[in-house]
Image (cartoon, rainbow, N blue to C red):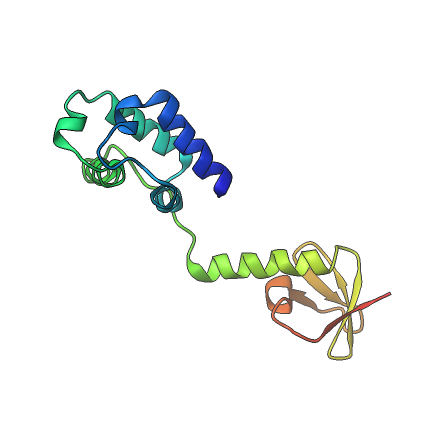
Length: 148
């Protein structure tokens, strides 16, 4: 995220001089909020559009608030469809899955509560009963031991 924040702020400084000279220019925390809401390419397009509007600095104070208002107007007028945002549960499951794969690589064997599993791409294969357990569920177990 820090890389995108830097990229966006540099883009504004280089390509959008009117936006950069607004009374309240975009800062790192505001850029971070915008990047959570919109893809960086859409933000660059929006800031370029703002920069091309001649009365920008006479009529608007804040780069952040103006950008939000312009996106809101574009959405209301059907000119922009915001990307779907993953819900919190999906984000948590994805985070748990990544953490699980940091600890246990594919093909490794692990012990969960005395049962032997092999790590596969999206599942744990129970080698005793030939059953499968989704990685997202397995990631929530605390007492997992890697078998050497």
